[in-house]
Length: 217
Image 1 (cartoon, rainbow, N blue to C red):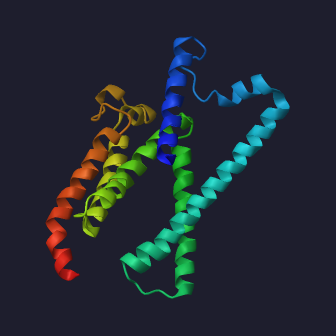
Image 2 (cartoon, rainbow, N blue to C red; image 1 turned 45 degrees about the horizontal axis):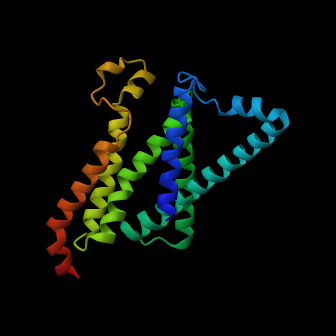
Image 3 (cartoon, one colour; image 1 turned 30 degrees about the horizontal axis):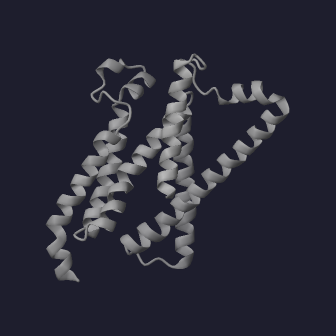
C-alpha cells in the first residue's frame, strides 16, 4: 500500500506538471521555480518559514544519510563482508573516517552539479538506487533460487552501470561543455537499461552459483 501511494504521488506530480505546461501556467524553460512561486503566493513571512523548514529538512536528511553510510562501511562492509575483525573502538574510528569521506564526496558532487535542476538530480538518484536495490529486493522475495553472490553482483552492476550511463548522457555532456548530440547514450535517465541489466546479472549469477552455495551450506 505504501509503495502504491508513493508511486501514485510521483505519477500525479508528473501529470500536474505537464498539465500546467500545456495550459501555459508554467514556463517549461525555467528551472527551480518553487521558491519564487511560494514567495509570490504566500508572502515574505510564510516564504521565510517554509524556507527554514526546507533547510532544516535538508540538514536532517543529509546527516541521516552520512550516518547510515558510515555505519554501513564500518559494520557491514569492513566487519561482516571483509571480516577484518576490528574492535569496537576501531569500528567507531572507521565510521568517523567514512562519514568524513562521504561528506567530502557529497560536497564535491554538489559543486560539480551546481545550477542543475534539483528535481532532475533527484530522479537520477532514484534511478541509481533502483538499479542497485530493486532487483535484489524483488528477487529475494519472489525467487527461491536467489543467492548471495547473485545479489552482490546485481548491486554492483546496477550501481556502476547507472552511474556510467549518467556520465555519458546528453545532460552531462551539456554540463561539461560538450555537444549533447554526440553523447553515446541518448537518454538522460539510465533506469531503462541499468535496471533490466541488474535483473539479468542477478539471475545469471544466481543460477551459476546456486550449487556452490548449497554445498557450502
